[in-house]
Length: 144
Image (tube, rainbow, N blue to C red; front, side, top):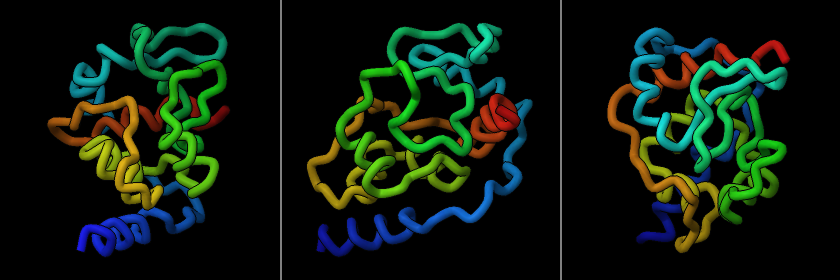
């Protein structure tokens, strides 16, 4: 039964994304809710403008919308499951994949990769509106 659930979950999120849709959340609310993310993540542009203080644990979230999972250049701490989600299973962060991931990081990676033991480095499950945080993050790097 577990294998069937994992396969169904993987099929749902393995669909290719034709184009990035406009975020459905409220970016202003997402900016307020980003405090949940700030202990591990920050946002800074490639030219050095700091939007949210960079934290040493997680990758910079500049340009996360539309980026292949596990592929931020210069960040070396992605788990093998996160790297496989992007490079082998085609995960590109859009609103649906981002929301599913931040609501259940381990479950999402297990579903996408089909590996019942897959784990990422993010163990925190987001509290609040993931759609709002995605809308906030989608503002940064979209034109790069």
